[in-house]
Amino acid sequence: MMETQRQGGFIIFLTFVAALVLSMLPLPDWGEAIRPEWVALVLIYWCIALPLRVGVFIGWFVGLFLDVASGALLGQNAIALSFVAYLALRLHLRIRLFPLWQQAMSVLVLVALYQMISLWIKGMIGATTQGWSYWLHSVSSMMLWPLVFTILRFLRRNYKIR
Image (tube, rainbow, N blue to C red):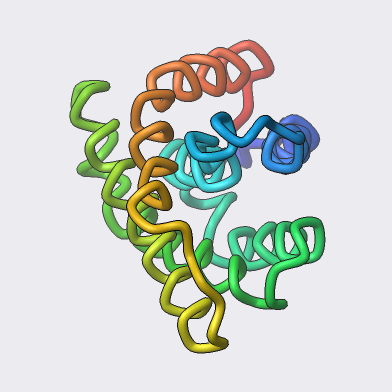
C-alpha cells in the first residue's frame, strides 16, 4: 500500500486567515447588515471537500480565533462553528452531489443554524440583536457560495491539496 502524502495545509490555513480578515474588515452600516459569514463559508467548503483533514476541532479552533478577534463571548463562535462543521461532515457526501444552487441552499441552512446558535447564546447573556436584518448574513452567504466554492476549488486543484 502506498501512503499518500498530505499537502496544502498552509493553503488551508491561509484561506481561514483570509476569511478572518474579511470578517473583521470595517464596512459602512449598510454593508455590515449584509456581510457574509466568511469563516463559516470557508469551514463548510473544507469540511465538504476534505472531511478527513478539516473537521470539528478546526471549527472549534477557528471559532475561538473569531471570538477573540471580534470581541464576542469566548466560545460563542467556537460552539456554533463546531456544530456547523459536524453537520457539514455528516452531510458531506450528499452535499457534494448537489448542483451548485442546491449546495447554496444547504449553505443557507448551515449558516442560519450557525447564526441561530449565536443568537441563542447572545440571548442567554442578555445581548440584543438588530431584528430581521440579522438573518441577511445567511442570505448573502448563500448568494456568495458559488464564488467561494469556485475560488476554493481552484486553489485545491491548483495546489493539489489532498
